[in-house]
Image (cartoon, rainbow, N blue to C red; front, side, top):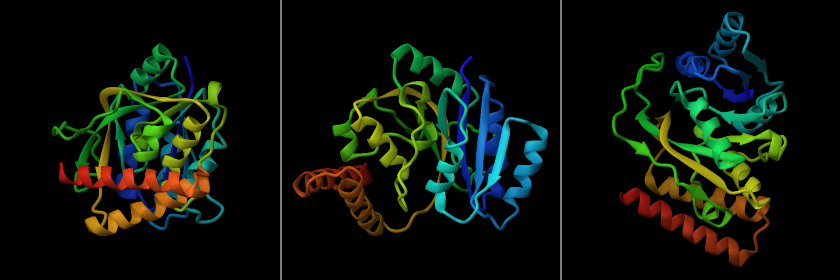
Length: 257
């Protein structure tokens, strides 16, 4: 049975942390370790993590030496990973019970070192401590196949569903960026010649938060995508411009759907 290393960054997540962790510990594939990095929370998250670790030895929390953001917190957890696979879940999202089992089988059958799944999207107002979730019909559908070119235009991978094979890819860390570190990681894997495969079944639950106005979101997309294209991917100005134009168009199109 492959060991799965689950990476979870935490910052002031006491209200939702318990439900997220329980959704991992109740997986039908139980051979896993939950590597949690607390990014200097001030709301008692670390105390809750310590208590949960006493109850289940698979919960392995550590406190970050200093506040470094979600990307750095994830990397501190990835560096401790012992598993054959590395999977990701944020401290306010949840997995359905068969997520790990089904995704491992999917990855093995398709010989895919990077996989992801469809997922449900719910409002943040949902009860944070409840692991019971009734599908409400809002599903973010996973594409069957994503290559580097398609990924440049749009991030097709929900981080809460992503899993990569360490036996094939080795230990892959996220670039040290303020935002979109997960997107940069998927791109770096694909740039090395590995495509991603998507499992159509929704197996996770994403808690959607209000993130500001539509116009401010679009400006943020422009800023961070341009930095990613130029600094992380090393694209030329013309190619980065084409990729950015495609990303903005896709974002505008999706906002009208």
